[in-house]
Length: 165
Image (tube, rainbow, N blue to C red; front, side):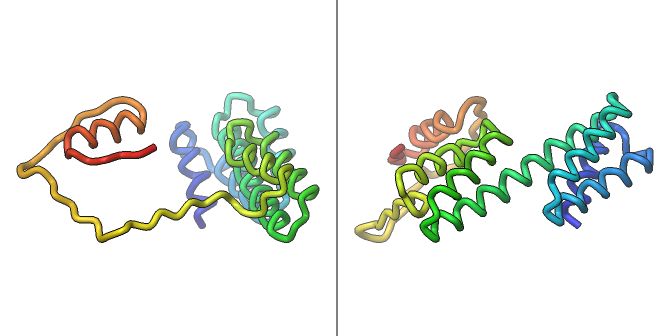
């Protein structure tokens, strides 16, 4: 149901929800992707894009299929790496990264697989004692535009917190 909702939202965002043809086509593409037939879904959507190049919903759906495939490849790579299959994991992470070149996790996991690291790097911090919060009294409002680090710095100053990166 979620897959259909995402694709219907893509149609609404592009202003094509009134037409039933794109909606039915996107539902078919979602079913193909959900069954793991990513290649079939991509071919189907590429054919639709070739026939209707102005239909933005098809392009959005194609990107969603590629993202879903990348996530699936990363999950399979993580399992392979956990089983000690570094070469297979490297291949899966490389495929995921080629589908989504902005996916830093896929790139990092490829590097981890080459180095023989089995699981994701997780650092657990333990507090020596219970944390006691002591906020400044009064109502506080923050209007901020910028990156996350800057926002955390702003909270640090505003609420007299200690922030480590």
